Amino acid sequence: MDTEGRVIRFDSFSKILSSGIRLGFVTGPKPIVDRVMLHMQVSVLHASSLSQVLVSNLLEQWGEEGFRNHIKKVENFYMERRNELIKAADKHLKGLCEYSVPLGGMFLWMKVPEITSTWDMIMERGLAQNIMLMPGKAFQAETDKPSQYLRAAFSVAPIKNFDPAMERLAQLIRTEIKLQ
Image (cartoon, rainbow, N blue to C red; front, side, top):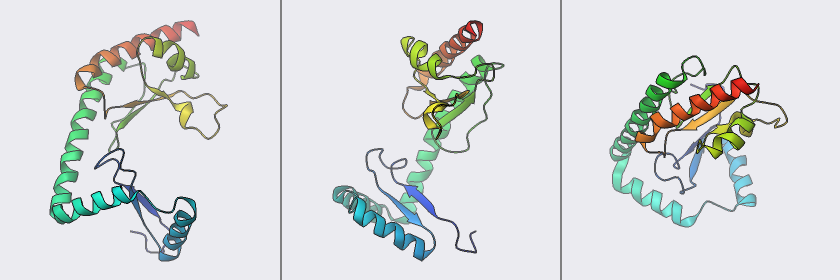
């Protein structure tokens, strides 16, 4: 789609093969990709040799069709988990949070409009109640500013925990609104 050579794309095998693989690739205009390669050579030398050999052998064994089949399985895996989390969020967080169904990734981003900052709510009171979400502030460049956002991961937790987790979050938000 980039006809002017202005787009750089970074991809990672971490989300589709193994979270610890720490291996990815970049595509884009050759002069920029060459600069990225030079930077990698002086900063980290190269990605782990073991990771490179494992991924290379796996891709060679699978071929393009096998790799595409694997990607489809991964997409279905995350889509099922996402759908279950959305179902739990719809059940418990309607009227408390704003969110939309993510089209990719492993996270549900939520806005809590009636709360100025989600940091203390999650990092102090939420963790004490076994609610493990990330406050939006953790992802901001300006960390001194408050954030009304939360990030919920649906990649690791057991699906059976989604409903009780969203119920506990709803109770926490209601309590927090009363405290403000």
